[in-house]
Amino acid sequence: MTSRPNFLFLFPDQHRFDWLGPNPDLPLRTPNIDWLAERGTRFLNAYTPSPLCSPARACLATGRDYQHCGVRNNGQNTPLELPNYYRNLRNSGYEVSGVGKFDLHKPDLEWGIEGKNKLSEYGFSRGIDNEGKGDAIWSYLNSDHTPQGPYMQFLVENDLAETHVDMYRPHRDSQNALSFAAVTELPDHAYCDNWVAEKALSELRSFSSDRPWHLVVNFVGPHDPFDVTPSMRREWEGVDFPDAVDSDEGDPTDIRVKRQNYAAMIENIDSQIGRMINLVRERGELENTIIVYASDHGEMLGDHERWAKSVWYEASVHVPLIVSGPQIREGAASDALVSLHDLAATFLDYGQAEALPDSDARSLRSVLEGSAETHREHVVSGLNDWTMVFDGQHKLVLGSEPEPILYDLQADPNELENCASRHPEIVARLQSPL
Image (tube, rainbow, N blue to C red):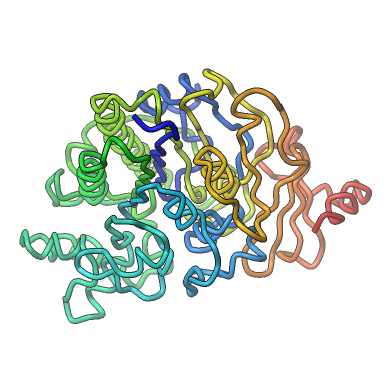
């Protein structure tokens, strides 16, 4: 066993903060994620630096906030010239691996059928970079049904590609092309998150025991579309969920089905996580492995008559974050304000690797080990023209509307009332750090 800890980073796509146990208002089933929280520290105020895939992941990789990560939207690659934590871990002696949807070079739509394109350049020793949900379909159809990544290549080799594409075709030209619910005809083993999990287990089995390792598992779910296998659907048929917040539009039955399928995707990811935890235990490495569960951003799920992300509402910018492992407080629920990209500094701190230059990420170690209760005075998130700053009670949004938007989340957790005109002093105070 190595003296430096291993890192198992479980990183689903679009998992909103409150769809996580324990939540008495939601009938979720996540025993393995719950076990991680019982064994570690759960952050109740974790926020993404940007609620969109590519910018969020660029911020995480580089340890920089949205304004300095080099990626404004999904149309830009994470700049290779910027230092990132994957390279620094690898340079310090870690075997750095990852599987799933990285989205570090999303606009290219070229992963290579083995999923190796640019992985080494970004700092990985090995791994498999595969297509996200929509990208798998669009790249396949736009290249005359030729796979551009490893997942579609797998489906082609197993005569399942057209089955997968057929599920998407009726929705391709709709306004919200991915915000639909469906039961896929793919068998369970070919469902993308299950395929990603098998690749992750293969990586875990192949790690040497005399060298520290880092594995990030980039699940494609619970990102929309809300597609599930028949076995996943059966487990959630008829289960009731709360209605969407601040929404008078849409079919309540359709919203309920999407929420059922979203819960099913989360439960399926949780099951795959259990397999990985068991394998780490079988390898005798559980006591020397830091396990992190987080997400790049949330999902609106019909709240405020919106789907997906890209906005400043809590369901979009507030993310789950659980860290467990050696020296980390067990069963703790921290109110500290933290940003997702703080994980970059945290991994490097625990891994005894060189810190990132020009980074504003801050290691979570003092909070994780109990020597501090606070971390940041405020967190900032942004996308395109808007910027949000949150101090633990008040959330200020600038640039989205001509006038500032201010919410008091203690009095108004559903973000229904803009109270900026009544509190100009709070608006001025929150503007000062921007």
